[in-house]
Image (cartoon, rainbow, N blue to C red; front, side, top):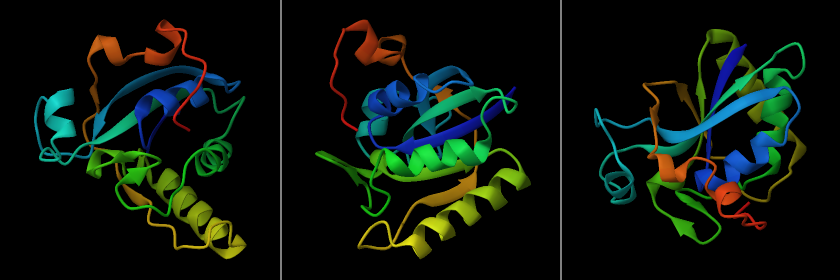
Length: 156
């Protein structure tokens, strides 16, 4: 098993999208990329913690590669809007790939370049590609939020 960590706006919709992928064994929503030791939802939403709403993914590289996950990541959000996805605004909604190895960093950068060259969006991609810092799982009520409430729509 390997890990990947993506931020692409509201983590509820990101988790829902990733949970549907064959080869993804588990997902956890949480906070990554900030400076607080123990972030919570209220502090992250205040914009003062530096954290992004993120999803940590455990996946089987024999079934799906990191590169394939990246292809999916680019498809379910807008990587050109700084600190915003849809109606959600704030630095916690930024687009980011938190890499766990040098190979992941290289793959993420190559994937971003490929998307930029393809001209998939009219504006430049602003997705951060940064080393994964400590991932802090979100409060239990956020885990599988849409699924628990039988909400069929997603913010993505």
